[in-house]
Length: 254
Image (cartoon, rainbow, N blue to C red; front, side):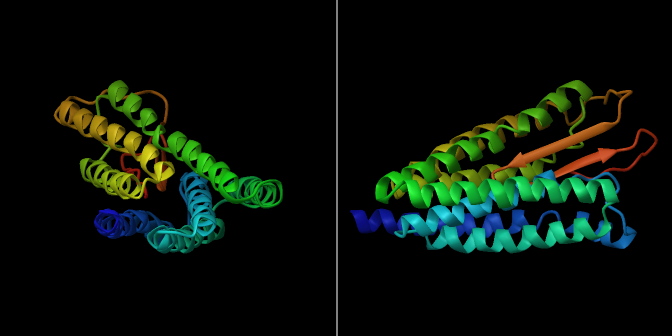
């Protein structure tokens, strides 16, 4: 029976890897435009810094856990590489102020924050206690990330526009959450399973909101539109000047 559960978990993990791989690559059109225009045009680096930090957390958790973590390591290793490339491109083409704020954020979260967590868990805890501490950090962090689409839902209700909440993205993020939920559940790894229940719930809410407002007459707001999506692992933030008529959709990860 245990072998049967592990086989199903592996299958869900492989499908989760495939979907997560595609979601990780979702910002490519955005960065192609950044490269083409040699400008970040108001895009923010926060989603990519957060996505990189999330991947680093899960890699550390996987190495400490040892058992049944190959699929966590593969996708999050890919995530670290991809997010690092995105951030390098951002730093090259961002204005000085945005570049400095990104460097500060990377140092604060990914260097000092992750470093402090790494050292404290390595030297102040052992065995199962260490794994539990790291697991809870991953769980709480990912719950906060999965809750971020509430911002998008609020924007949709306010503007009666689904421009920043594409149905295809919401659909794949929901399916992705389902894959990783069953992966964690079948392996009895609730640090992986529990955050993805929220990912599934918010994904369903987003798709329902899309169907409700897809044909609605948009309300034009006076202030600049700023949309943000932080999902499980990939994320994009959009800022559109008030005189602009074009935009980019938010994108997200595992």
